[in-house]
Length: 394
Image (cartoon, rainbow, N blue to C red; front, side, top):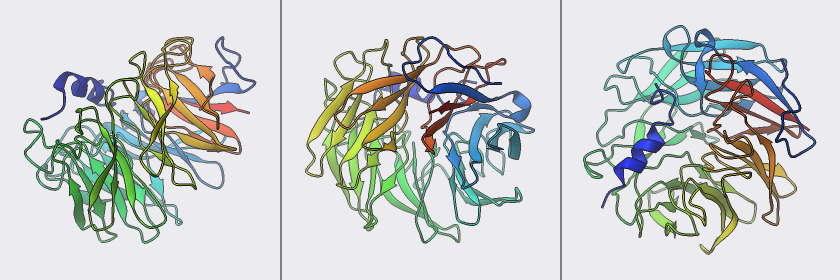
């Protein structure tokens, strides 16, 4: 058993490389917040940011673009609080670039200001790599994927622990299963750059093609989703212990409980896991779910397309007071995606609907919350249709 090829290709096409000034008061804003465009992306400054943003203590925002920049293979960038952009690093174009090409996920940052991420392509085998970027913009390649047992095409962001170890997923590789593509891996990169495959998916009951990044609990257990595989080939939520033992916490059934999870999870202090599915639900365009520690799933919201959004492909982010924020790739009042809030009781509220013009369209990455304000990116929209960085101010 291996995943449905047509649906898989549709998801992969959302990656930036596979798809080859304030603006306030737009119709469709369902809250008192003010929507502002911080930056319009153009080829020179990077194009198609897809992985979300992270913030430092000074309010600077950091992210990646999947294409554009001086080398045409994407960038790592910084946005000052006033929206001024600095390109910290430009990747070269082409699958065989030694420094990587096409960073699809977001970044993580250590206490010294070094940034860590992954590229979908590039490296010695053109199958992607993991990199570190110093504060002065010097890149160090930590690991190059071979496309075999160590994995292929890391499309998500990384998780970093207190010891400096990096954890992530590769969409493909790890085995010869899943139609010859490989079913994906969970990997660990030590500070010295050595890689260890913690788990290689088989495409059977354990899941296949882990599109999303990972989260961890205080004991070092790792949680994630696989987009396909499982009991009904509709994806799973899994737990991975430090010794690499995998446990499936939930099998999606493809009906009202959702199917095809492509986003990372959020975990609360009580051990409940929250996430989204790209498909499934009553209307076939995704859900928000909660998974209790005993594995019981509760569907908190079923998306209907308009006005509440469709295809929620980004991780949920805590906004405090039991609220979670997320984005949908499509739907909303304008049909080009939405920013939404899920209350502690499961109620959904659309905070902003994208119109696909200067305000951006089709958000894919997760948002960042700082001082109550919401920050994010869209891979499309803006004057050159290369994407925007936005703020939704309280």
